[in-house]
Length: 248
Image (cartoon, rainbow, N blue to C red; front, side, top):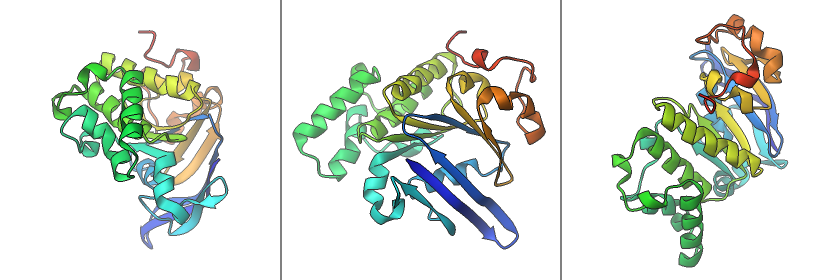
């Protein structure tokens, strides 16, 4: 289980970007974290696999501080950034996905086995020889996800995974995320696009000005979103069950 304990971070004594955050994520859960711009969502994400080190508090995975073995932490907790281009390192889709295992000095046989498995799982096999920068937005996002999945993580953290995607791209990425959760992966999804995904989450966390303002089942929090600066395109009178783009 991933646990955040009393996490705080500031850029100066007057600018507190995270304020005493306490959260835990059970194995196989699907949590959506939302909040207005500047609420601390991305700062929180960057702490979850050790990109940022807590100034106060700690983050543990199965009871062990994640900074005790940062390489293993980053294998078990994969981050998919909002800008997929920032994660592209290979000249082809296949080589990009293989980059992480190669750095960990996996055997060639293991690398090929797991890369091919991920290519098939995310329907990327036909694109494996393409240059990543020539892909569509949705294909790039899936390529970035594949580069995380090949490391066989337990937890996948996604930062605004639907930004800039067309309807087809949103559907493809959303289907991949739901499938991974059904396989037992813990999903932590940071998004303001709640109308696209909230139907599939079992918990919603609302951040505002670096503080957790509410945690609970999505249906319980739906009507208090606007008071925390989260504005939805259709207003607040809608059922959580309809908040998905898979049905449109």
